[in-house]
Image (cartoon, rainbow, N blue to C red; front, top):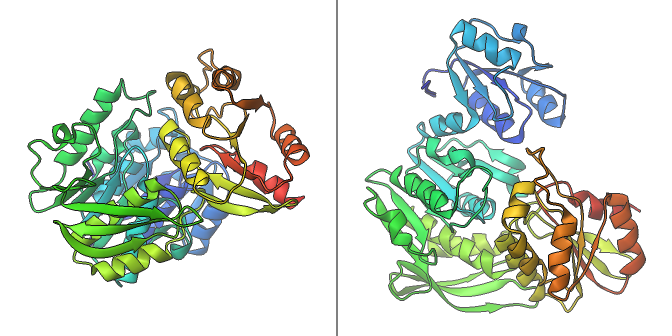
Length: 460
């Protein structure tokens, strides 16, 4: 496999450079002195930003975009074998890397590379670690899967030897990484269009744990069922986080304020390391914060700095993000939750907030996930007072597998909850504006484009 050496910058071409992760990696290489070019099917603010920084971006993908002097071609999962640029690169024998492989190769150039993995909570925990490292003046380079205001996006280019990255398990992407410090927040059934079953997913996380070097460490939640199976025979130090007395780092005395934001006592090896109070709601965020605090303590950060940074952390975009207030004091929230466990965590957090009726406007994400977890989705959504369903967002899928949002609605109704289905966003917006104007909390939820519903209503 081709490598990346920051001491030997070369010409790297990105097929699909307009993607949020690809554009960020292109910026990192550009900053390190590499000649960077790329192509995309359409111009966008991201491609325009790259061009303003001296990156040549071709709009439209064709064979002539590939130069025989290019030393490396990077491509995304969306690029197929018949892509003219990919075919030409292969004809010329130019080395190829996937986006995940490039991210892994980039990690090799840092003395400390933190990779945050888990079925849920990766983006938030990566962001928390970023905030702590900034507060500690560690000047990190960061690649995160969401938009974080404090770094002005999803990428930060630092000049230190610290790299912080979100590590996604889908298609085993994180197995291309070279972390020195790792986190496994949780392991659950998801991405069943790729993984066979939960056992297959657990095996993938075990392989991730095995990547950590002997002088590295792995932070893992002891809440994970039989977590010892994942950490057995790993080379690195294993650090557990949880509520057990025997955990290396634990939290205790958890409480919540009127906004649902948790506080907890933080312990290291049974000794108090102070209190942590969060500015984001939900018990799930307390678990995210515990893992982040443990990781950064192991990297030598003062617990007082950790507590200060976590209190100031306001979350990332699309994670329980307050979008605005509609007439009638109706609060509009948006959240990225698209798995039953995430939905349950978000709605539980909403329940700990102000005394408002909770209406969840949910857009199921992919047919395969909806079909595989139909009962679990219904159970989680029933935590809302009322549910509004949009059509399934297909994402990468085309086959509907004989499943629709109406099937989910039927399951929710059997649990005694009022649920309504609509085919279009304008229908949803009209229904919400007509029926909710007495201080309700409307939560648009899903990994697709359901966020537009709340934004459209707030523009009226």
